[in-house]
Amino acid sequence: MSEFKALVVSEEDGKYVSKVTTRHVDDLPAGEVLIRVKYSSLNFKDALSASGNKGVTKSFPHTPGIDAAGVVEASAVPEINVGDEVIVTGYDLGMNTSGGYGQYIRVPAAWVLKRPEGLSLRDSMLLGTAGLTAALCIDKLEQAGLAPDQGPVLVTGATGGVGSIAVSMLAGLGYEVAASTGKALQADFLRKLGASQIVDRTALEAGKEKPMLKEQWAGAVDTVGGDILFNVVKSLRYGASVVTCGLTAGTQFQGSVLPFILRNVNLLGVDSVEQPLVVKASMWDRLSVQWKTDLHALEHEVGLDDLPAEIERILGGKMVGRVVVRLD
Image (cartoon, rainbow, N blue to C red; front, side, top):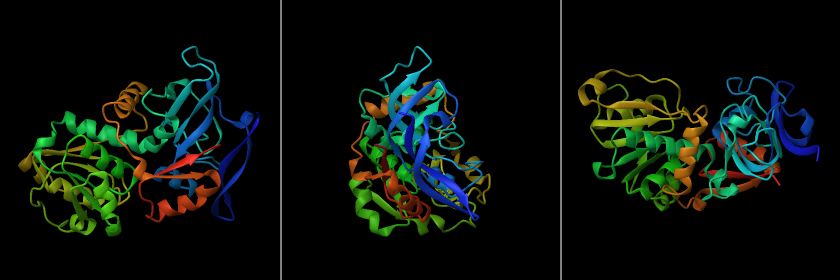
């Protein structure tokens, strides 16, 4: 099959428009592995790419999709065979390399991970980059000394992809989870995921002018950035850590050194895009076995034709949980 369907973003009259159209396999970029994509997922970075954000995607027309799961159709390397079920997340996929919103992708072998036995292709995309990021965050907090008996762990942006998975995973691991959101109507949803406390986002926005805030959190997963992130830093318990992985509330904050030198706290960063494949494989193994959790309460499945509307929803801050994209 040389033709396939893909969501293509093009610039028309100064606006970026997403349409499902026909593409040709021969037009895909060079790479050792050709994959028939079965599932993808929707992430905030995909929406940025689809809206013409040049910090994500430099040239158009373009097919977004930073996640893909499917079956190998052709391979030029011996360790990856035709018929293998595989996952690709991050690296340049969906940014400047044609991504998972097409029924075929061609990528370097160094990006390709064989599907863990404990996950189906569909379930791997229910997790996707969001699940991988949540796992990396929790792993980093535990490496810094976090344990379930130390007190509540805060998750900001808790209704989003990374946040909702982090809430579910932390609760499953025995942590007391406080979930922060600006969507008051989603409190029951967060409690079903395992949150024992709901924190209104406005409570985390207060006090940004103060150098220190009351100690509350034994640890935190921050998915929003901005002044909320540094307010979390200022309210960590002595010796605690916050790991940050998002920027929906901004890339900058007003801060001081006082929390670090008076409370001995840590601000840790997580990147899921350029992690070595061996690190990603380790996290996917955990997600498929030790950290496996039922995420089906999070899911909303759509096809390619539904994606433009879903992209508008996530850009408008209206998405809750995870959107799985069906390519067939």
